[in-house]
Amino acid sequence: MLRVFNRVLLGLAGLLLLALGAAVLVGALDLPRHWDFSLPSAWPFQGPDDVLLTAADRRRWRHRQWWWPVVIGALAVLVLAGLWWLLGQVRRRRPREVVLPAVDDPVVVVRGRAVEETVAAEAEALDGVERAAVVLVGRRGAPGVRAVLVLSPGAVPEVVLRRFAVEVLEGARTSLGLGRLPAEVRLRGVRHRAERVG
Image 1 (tube, rainbow, N blue to C red):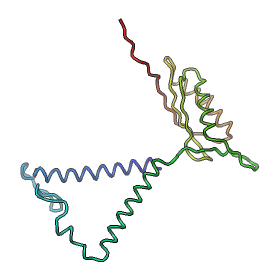
Image 2: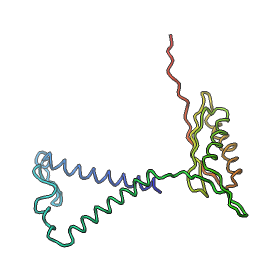
Image 3: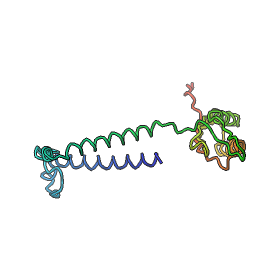
Image 4: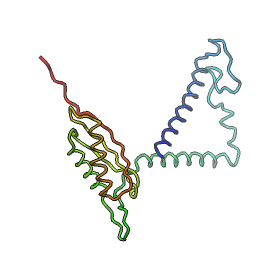
């Protein structure tokens, strides 16, 4: 959800800045006069001498009772929305624990870090995997796995991915008693330093 919101927010901000930049550029470079075309009457900048807000516009609402409360309220909303967005970026998305589905009480809880370390160790034990990094994502009652597998030279990615899904992920899902364990896996090749020849 937050990822979609970020993309929409960045897209809208980009379009707004692009439109504003184009409006300022057309007026500042006096392109209508140089290229012999006319701008719509609603265009904010008609020439290089135009300003964003005229003196009359800046003083227009100052004598109204509602002006300052509205300005302060709007700025407060913008600041709170910015803080909410910032906290959403840094908020911990990894579940600290996984709740195992159990028929009887008490509820069984497993540390998230233990699950991550176990899955990573089993992944590194596979042929063709040099290193593995695993983090849990999602909710504590419905976790998912995000893994990065660094493949050793000569490893076949398709084979490694199939073995990881069948042997490691399926084993973890069964051990935790989960109905499903969605995973996002990224494969990377191990990097070697360049060797001098000759």
